[in-house]
Image (cartoon, rainbow, N blue to C red; front, side):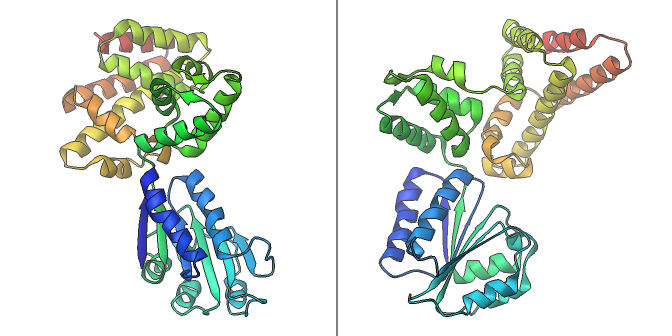
Length: 343
């Protein structure tokens, strides 16, 4: 069994490129499993492993299956069929769901597969207690694509800019990852927009990101909460008025405000129980592109006692009820909360 975790550029060069070279040298394994939340990098290396395992022009010995309705017996039948004028045939299976709900027949087959077949599994969801995972964990090569470290993502962004003949300021990279998270697919799309926007210029600066990078309602509320926590009342109110000017509903702002403080409370409790960043992200079920919040929430929550956070959440809920019952105007209700807790 080979287990590889990918969370930095160094991991890519040290592990993935080494595995690909082994395949090219004729030392391939029979089973490869690619999974994890970093979708962009995972799909890139799916293509690279496929090209290394089989000549791209050899259409007779490569087979692709995708989705949760794959006929396992058809797959096994192909696996047992001798390759056509080649050393082996390759079977790519994507998002089968077998590693989440298990597939007994395939799990058993993978214990003793035909010597002339190579399997490449690419999955989104994984249950490490299941038979499929345990079999591959024992018999094959398992590669988990985790959220990349920020420093590695910044190096990658710098490399993308260099290929376009540009240089990206450190502040611009920092702002972009703050805005959209560390998901490489999302960042790639934003970088492409920045390249177009800065056509004819060699420098990408923070102001370019400020203009182009998409800001959701949630992004605005994140910044507003940061201002509230930092007791920056004028900034918090300005951000709230900006949202109103953009025709955002006060009720939607209140919902996100309540959720932010509730998540701060959860993070504080987990931190006090001894959970680290990864543990907090997992327990709170943070999306792959938002695991940075496992650092941010505890930092914000450290400025409050647990009693203070409970009081804020309770008052947010009470304000929502007051708005629904008509006892206070929605715009004013949210404004009063912001004023009270940013003093």
